[in-house]
Length: 150
Image 1 (tube, rainbow, N blue to C red):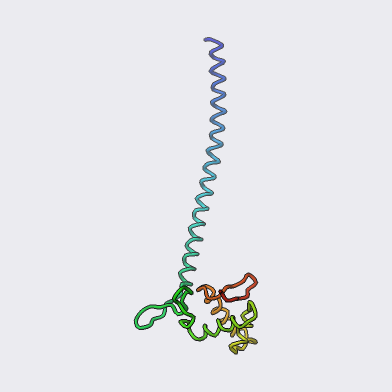
Image 2 (tube, rainbow, N blue to C red):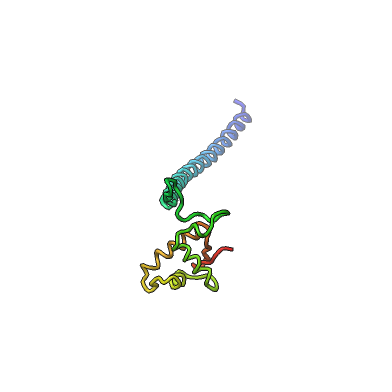
């Protein structure tokens, strides 16, 4: 047997063994990353489902007028007048407008005559302020105060 040829075969076998070891390591890393992606995918699906469920549960429930479904608190858009809001919401908007600037829930409650010393009376008012904000009638500032939109 040719010693030079044997040396080349041995060297090539060593190269292939090294390459096989490197590829096996890369394959293990790829499989690990795939497993991590599968977990991330399942988490994303669950979170997306939870968000969709939360949005569905907070969707506005329409009222009925003349047999037709209407939103009790309509979105502020051209053609929708403030007078289309229920009277208590109109009073809340008027109170926010009369204030010299952004107002807290308690301040809005003092104007229409809500008993602001009782927290349970303020929470429904806060809900109405948030609903008006969601529909575009008011703006909520980062500090929790509300202001009218121009």
